[in-house]
Length: 399
Image (cartoon, helix red, strand yellow):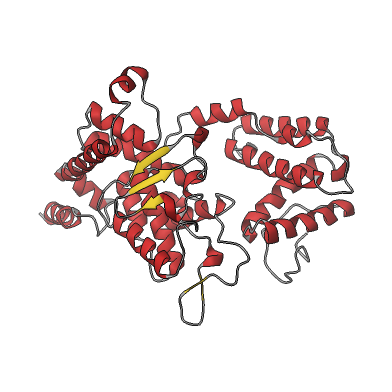
């Protein structure tokens, strides 16, 4: 499966379980071309799709794809669910189970569209995780070891010497300053982000929001150059003629340099498209965290979302009004008794509350907190309190 799948010879692929059925190999070759040429997925994401299909095929003893039944789909899903419940090396994470089933379901849907294949019309649905399961997993409280100072260190360690680095740095800045969900971030277009007012309009008709909610998000001014990084990226987009309908965070293929060293779009038959998968952005985060030596790179986009509330609540002496403003900013629905009093909070009022909350949070670090942050390398040089933290550390270390 590592040769001749799309006409690109000699390229390096991640290891994939071997497929022994020749008819299945032909389908996988055609599907790879479809993912790369028509879905515009990068090679590593395509490999992840192929690994999911290899897992399914191995479980079904390499049964021809065109003869897979509903019973096969149910047995495979039950197998993955069982592996999810196992602790230790033999277990699977909920994320792996969901991604594997989603990718198998997408393949079945594609296979059904081929003229020479006749499989049950509703087969793909039997490879999908139920909405009840997804809601349960989403509702589980998953802790994070990441804290706000570490998030800033990840951001501070990122380069900005070329368009890809500039974009990656802006992506991490947006995660920290907004807590936005990754599904929404990868579907944002230029028209949804106003870096001058710092408002992001997550319109569910165009942006992938949780439960199709319309969310208005204000970029928090948390210092350390976060807002400036978004401004720099927006300026680059504009100077290189990417308009309001282009993705705000452009995939790599639109950031290749031409002879003049500028952004190059190529002669596209259609406007630039958003990422079709979250995987490239998750890799950006893990690589940035690894470079900064934070938690061995073992974090995801959602970890940034979880650091905002603890930091602002503890450092900013959060009031009920502040709490509502932050909940609305994260796209949460306040509890009924609170919603009755704050359901009509204007954008200007929320903006005012959040700006003041951030100001208090950044000003209320104790000497001990700054000492520990510097000692543990959890405070970035761009942080307004970096010099103060260093002085406190030096005085107490050498005294």
